[in-house]
Length: 292
Image 1 (cartoon, rainbow, N blue to C red):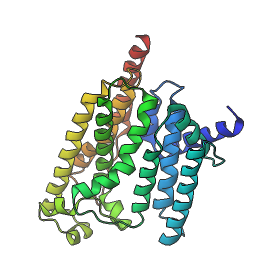
Image 2: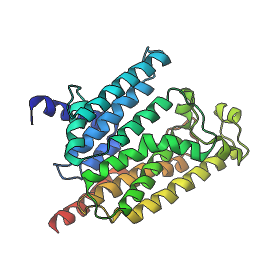
Image 3: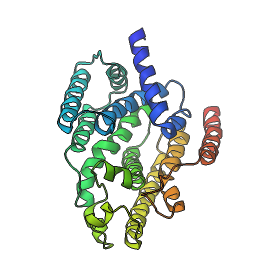
């Protein structure tokens, strides 16, 4: 591996450790040879996300759109050519080539990132799923060849888990997303409980908003259960990592419940104690998998 490629992988690892602490903790359960490639996928996703969501940026929305489009087009072109000089792109290209990851996943991701600059509301759950596919589902699908799997049913499990992760984040970040001018909760779902867009924007908890959040939490848990049934189709050495990630990411909704569903004044976070408990159990499972 060249020095430049090593630097690229290290930069992706740094971004993962800095911005995705829960995700990074889970990746430590993977064999050392798999981790850099997972970091490469995360580095790509995180760098694009920073362009879109950096609230401290002085860029106008139009300038952000241009920067995102130009960077994304360059990375996609590099993936097509099989070569890159971009600090993030080098590791990504190397990973995609080694595991033959479909280019369409990355195109779908960039499409969703561009949607974040123009789309601020989703009327229905199906409308939202178009965004979720590119912003979250494809990341799980990209990881499958790295994790290893023996049955096509792992694909539907990865789809369900990626969706659950994203919905859990949406629930936790309702208040923060309003600050960014966005509402990810489908407006039709809110209306089922008598919650209007105007009511949500007031950032004040009501019984109706609580019920709407409970409805979305039930959806997260149903998706998590669907995904759990498919984890068995992964390479045994990768299963503890994904089970840990599932518990920690989807566990965000447990913390929302513990905060009495108040997503406006309390940001739900997974406690250090829970992270250590989940990681310890997963580490033991990983040791047994390696012994077998």
